[in-house]
Length: 154
Image (cartoon, rainbow, N blue to C red; front, side):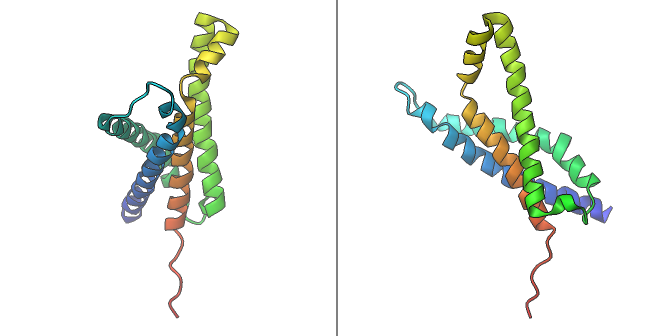
C-alpha cells in the first residue's frame, strides 16, 4: 500500500509539472493567433485555458498516466529519462493525431476533402498540439527523474 500511495503522489506531482508545461506551451503556440488583427486577450482567457487544461490533464492522469505508472516497475527500462520522455511524446502525439483526425473526418464529410482539411488545420491546432506534447514529455521525464537516487554527498 505504501508503494501504491508513493506512486500516486509522484505521478500526480509529475503530471502537475506537465500541466504547467502545457499552459506555457499553449500560450507560446497561441502567439500567432493573438497577433492577428482584431484579436484580444483578457484575464478571463488565462483562467479559462488554465481550467480547461487542468480538467483534460486530470482525466489523462487518471486514464493513462497513473495506470501506466502503477504497472511499470521501478527497475524498468521505460523509467530511463530519455525513454520516458520519448514515450510521453509519442503517447501525447498519438492523442493529438487521433483528436484532429476525428475532427478532420467530420469536416471532410460536411465540407468536402480540401475545404474540410483546410478548416481542420485552421482551428488553431498549434497551441493544442504543443500543449499536449509538452504535457507528455515533461510529465514522463519528471516522473522518471523522481526515481533517480540522490547523488552521494561524500
